[in-house]
Length: 465
Image 1: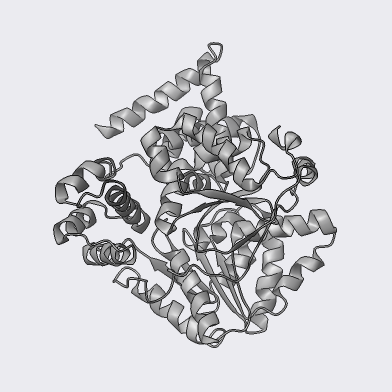
Image 2: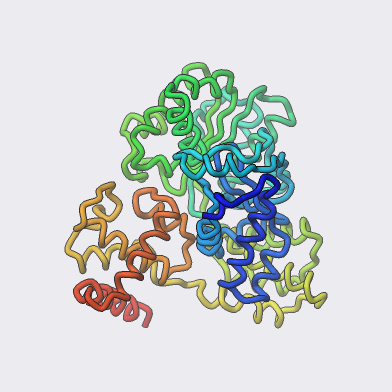
């Protein structure tokens, strides 16, 4: 492994250069220059690998399209990490030069040693209430978030749970609440984290300290707790138990809790019933896909933030074609921003059609992860629910791997979104499953599996007609 050969002055910058060389072999030169030329890599105290990029548009686009490539490059380069993140350069990181001994220890540790120290308490500067575009699809969620930010713990919206599909603004609202509470002084101690971070920190304390009580100290004086993507607690009873202890105590002390999820809480699989019941005691409000006027307003605001003036016909064209996902709108816009930056050409309707044709042409994606799960379950003669169950029995794990492989191949969903559809698994599990099935399909001895996969794909092709 590379980590075993590092000298004492080998920094994460050098490590990232090794990764970039591997990434360059997997994508086209133009794609590499556009998306990776201005990136960097840091590792924090929980061994999370953070790819730092110019702005939030880049972060969202690279995560959506290049997570698998980056994950492979990090692994091939011998970099040990627990989670892969993508963040803009506005975040403040303190860099510590890693030494060979530290990295060697990290290689053999379940929770790798710290290589950098990250400053806490910072919220993304663009994720404020002022930059959030309000429309009919998100008006109630926005109003509830504002009420909570202005008076944490003093409204009946406790807990406040904001749920909705990927890329609709849930994280934006959570961070806006935290940003407002800090800048306006409505809460003294604000803690924001993702459910993955919560889980990783808890495991780290248990493994390294052998005492979970020290984990709770972080939350002793919390006035406002914000946790993103609680669906990742699915199927993790130990983490759910510790979360509930903190959750219950804070509620009894009238501290404010705000959570986000990609679905209504009662629809999260493998979540303890008493947690769901407590969720129902507050306000659960959803965010729907934005309407045309809201999508156009989002595009104008994002373009303005990045110093780009777009013709009305371009804005209307994009907004009328991409209808379901704010993040996809932003991804389309970043293509235009990149084009304008690198070529100096004006953005016209013709240029937009040429650059964004793939995204627009596939907007009515008929094949979904759920559809693939249903067909896979039918072919393998198991129930759809079994594909999300946390069992390693081969009669379930094999069709689950097949369904993940086909979801990655046939849909435009991110690896993270696919994992959520299979009982809250993370994207590394999806990648592992896809590689496993690809290897099996290349084995001429595995005739039965090939036959079943071919049957599923035949049905998928027929559904597109």
